[in-house]
Amino acid sequence: MRIGNDRRQDDFEINVISLIDVLLTLLMFFVLTTTFVQHSRMQVTLPKASTEDRDMQAPALTVMIDRDGRYYVGSDEVLGEGIDPLKQAIARVAGEDRDRQVTIRADAMTPHQDVVTAMDALGQLGFTRLSIATTPARADAR
Image (cartoon, rainbow, N blue to C red):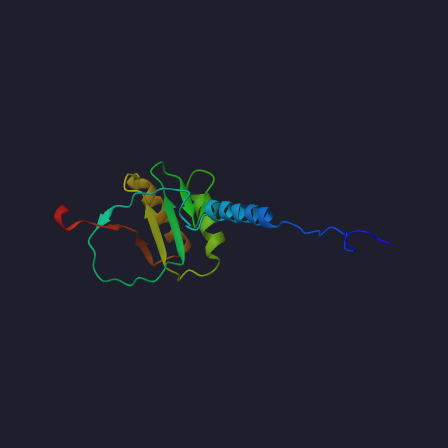
């Protein structure tokens, strides 16, 4: 005769609460460390200009110049000095399409020669639709 409970086996269960905590922590880490802005690597202070209605289509090609005279085509830095590496980088990004809009984003403290060099490189490659990015001027600053 048996004395005691017939069901003597232990109930086995896996505690997943700590695993969920680790997963949520990893998810928050990856979300917070991901960059979502294209221009987050380089800070450029744009010059001021008046605001009026314009065609606000997103430019297909962006050439950025920082205050130290370094060039960026899209989000890639142009390595090398002079106009030839800049032309090669622009041609590589643009391909054969020379009718696309090009925006030059130069820091307000960039030497004028660096902007002219970028415009010269674009002109030599056959780009004709150039614009220079600015920020709106305040009304009391006029």
